[in-house]
Length: 68
Image (cartoon, rainbow, N blue to C red):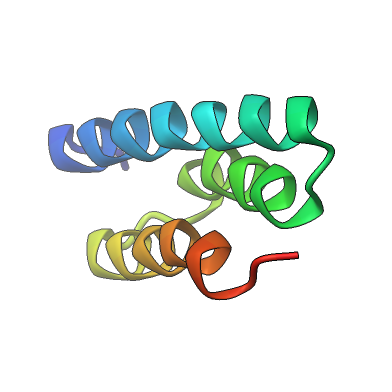
């Protein structure tokens, strides 16, 4: 069952993920590209709000720590 907070966080992480995906595609960088894909996909599979926020924040921080 999806409630409004899961929907809102999914929209936020999906929007950030779309930006990462476009940036990674244009710059030909794999870490932001796959991080963006992950951010767009995880709201479909994770229903627990705390795990969704934690995994979203990890995927947002991933391109900062792994620059290639």
